[in-house]
Image (cartoon, rainbow, N blue to C red; front, side, top):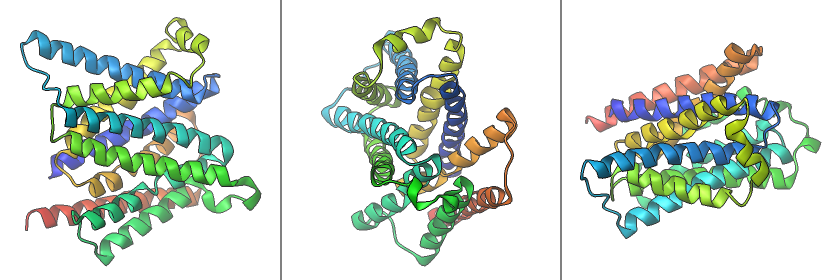
Amino acid sequence: MLLPIALVMAAAFQWGLAGGLAGQLMTAGWAPELLSFWRLLVGLICMLIWVAIIRVQGCSLNLTKPLIGWSALAGLGVTGNLTFYFISISEASVAVAVTLMYSAPVMVYFVSFARGTERPTLLKFGVIGAIMVGVILLTGLYRATPGAINLWGVIAGLLSGISYSVFIFAFKSAGSHGSTPVSLTVAFLAAVFALVFLVDPGQAVSVPLSPDAPLFLLFGIIGAGLSFLCYFIGLRGVLPTMAAVVAMIEPVTATLYGVIGLGQALSLAEVLGMIIILSSVTALTIISHRESIR
């Protein structure tokens, strides 16, 4: 139980680092949708190399309809998550976008309760509530003025959270139908195909020859290739609800990247938000571990 949780945490940690790298690349003038495209394209290349190695070793890919279907749905969920997240940022603010996207654990819990895969308890609802308070403090949403938030920004943020929930459940289902590299290859292929229509072709092909090419490569490996590998494997051993909550350390990691890597300062409210998120995730991990060994 602890190893799968650690893998999900490792994935969230890498996503947080990728968020910091994305901030640097956007500051350099690269479009958000282009970052999403190259992030997933690098992930696809990593998985294709892995699949090629498997084929050379004589292993079968076992491409079944359920594997393709669930993996493609997961890839579209990833695309929706990233695309709506950036739309929410542009229409509202980073604080609003992050907070609404991380409403996903609440959605995942309600779906799991309805499916009967998770038993609702007051303690779990309390932990989720504490995490949402922590995210609000960390992102500074409480400082947002009503005029800074428009309806489309809120809708896009909620759609980002829904897409997040979709790819959690889809990856969980795909994991029971085939191997990790094949499933991730299909998912990334679907995501890249969906994003190719949103990017500027001229800017997209200029990336490999730009001075930022090494940063894009690192961004893709951390943000997709290695992180989704950790997440997919970890998701095999934990409930979707647990994975959704544990991944909440991503905004904490992104904030710490800003402090350490970019020299940004933290307010008292942001520090308090980080403490609440980390302690709540730790508490839920302990609770779930105890439930699993009963």
